[in-house]
Length: 495
Image 1 (cartoon, rainbow, N blue to C red):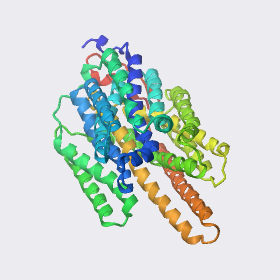
Image 2: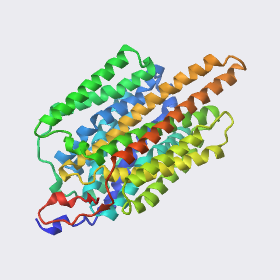
Image 3: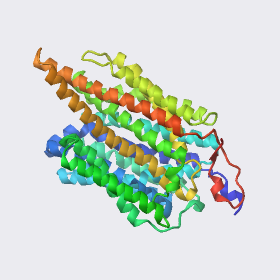
Image 4: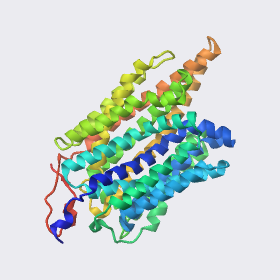
């Protein structure tokens, strides 16, 4: 093999535009539908019991199939998987926008999740194999990290605008132009290095065990929200998830070509990234969920005003990711960015635990900015370190693990913090009998939000401790490529 084969792709920066666009579309979809949900529920006559499935159907399909999607990208080719994921996502979005009943809408959301599970790991692993120089990689992952972190908040803004000024159906149709542009761009500029392809067979038992295990886990948390933690169904789902995931680990340690080679997860640095990122996302979802309700229900903001109120957090994320994270990533070890990043975000949470019935937006603003800055700074090295030093044939599955920890963290965070908030609401009402009923109800609501945000604060502190304790990689440095040794084309961490 000649050294020229390992030269950086001259079109890699153009490719980043379209990879970023696809990632934005997938991340948007986790929140853009949230604000549109009340309108869709009214229009299609969705029952209160089925309402949560519009969100959960997407999370279950996406979270459950991500590892499978990552391995498909490694086996089938990342570019091809990326294109199929984009096309399928656009078709599923068109189906959702045209939904005539509940079943059609839920089916479309599940399909979006399936194609998102192909698209997300293919996008991240394309970046991992196209950007191999330390400094360039820092910039590329800075941009990608900002999109991954800020996309959810952008989804809230876009969801508000589309619902208020057009129609809830446009929260689905908006994906189609995104997908078309990304497909055309990918066909024209993305070329993936052929050397990184994995030629082994697909591990079918692994696919079945991990998919059913993750679905059981996420569904267990969803049922805990509605049925309570001690119900037979909830406990049964958690037991099933534990058995299935333990069986998955056993199978992966035995089969010749595993779906998730244990070397990917058992690496101390990557394992630390997956664990700390999953915890941080649990904490972050608490913020989105409860501040959205607080702004709309307590402060009386419109959907658009609520979305715009999150803009300083998005700005903080972009600044933290591209200015702080990307500039410092090549100068200091990842844990000295990730741990302080999570701690700065937790200080933002601490400010937000002080909200009451009459808190002004200016009192909330510093909390939002700190959250954005901290998460942006931490996300960037996390995204890069998750695929650092991994063999090219495992890049897709290592990328899928980042997305899996985020998706499963998000689904768990929503259910866990919602359950905590509901219990706090009931306990407050029980202990406060005096005063006008409406006022007590409003106070109970705010108390439930602050209780959940206190939990989020603790979870973010834990994420910082996990990052600092487990991650021990030094500054990233581009590895000198030895002719004929493709595995050395992926940079390693300097200790």
